[in-house]
Length: 73
Image 1: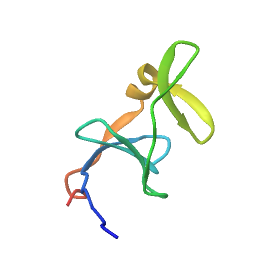
Image 2: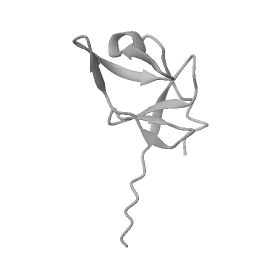
Image 3: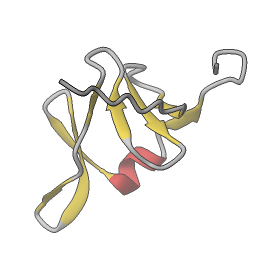
Image 4: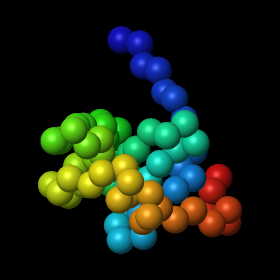
C-alpha cells in the first residue's frame, strides 16, 4: 500500500467555531476530524455545511479571522 501525505497550512478560522479552518489555497478543513469539507450548492448559492447548517461564501467571509502567526508552524 502506498500512502501520500500532503501538508496544508491553515491561515483562517471561523470566529464562532475554531474547528473549521481554511488554507492558503482556499480549501476548508474540519480540524477536529481532519477532513476536507466539500463546497456545495443550495438554491443557487455556493457555500459549506458547517455543523449541519448551510453557510454561503458571502456570509462566511464576514466570520473569517486570521490565525495569529505565533500558532502557525
